[in-house]
Amino acid sequence: MKVLKLDHIGIAVKNIDEAKKIYHDILGLPHVKNETVEEQKVTTGFFPVGDTEVELLESTAPDGPVAKFIEKKGEGVQHIAFQVENIEEALEELKAKGIKLIDEQPRVGAGGKKIAFLHPKSTYGVLVELCQEV
Ligand code: ZN
Image 1 (cartoon, rainbow, N blue to C red):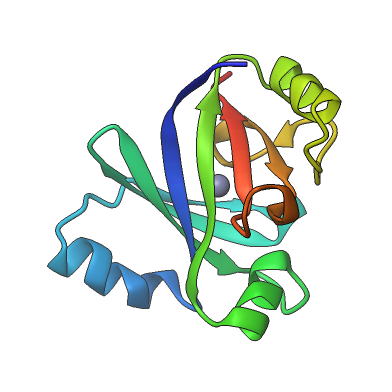
Image 2: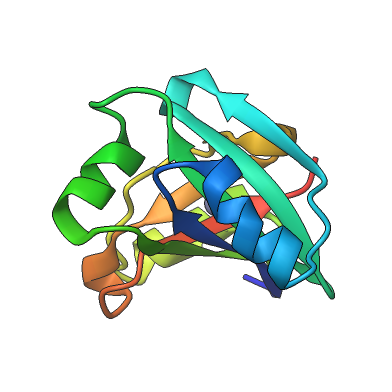
């Protein structure tokens, strides 16, 4: 498998508009857009920086994964995402090497990208997302 770059860092926040006051108003990162992915009960705000992005994540429902994360751990870094050349191939290879996967098959994430999560137990406590531009 080939990892192309650190695609983004996902930060769980209670309110994107509030968090934007830091990441955009103070740190000066451009705020490109917000996008809701209903299936994952999340709204994401994209803040590009260099060749990567900060992705703020706000839950759209109290039972969504981001809401649950905040309930357990508080606001903060929720996942990091690596862009890969071929996500299906990467998942197959990782599975064969004994890496625990959350998603065996890619699903559609924000921006229409193909995404899949690896289990934090296999990646030293960090939720890792693989993504591929389509
Ligand atoms: Zn992500």
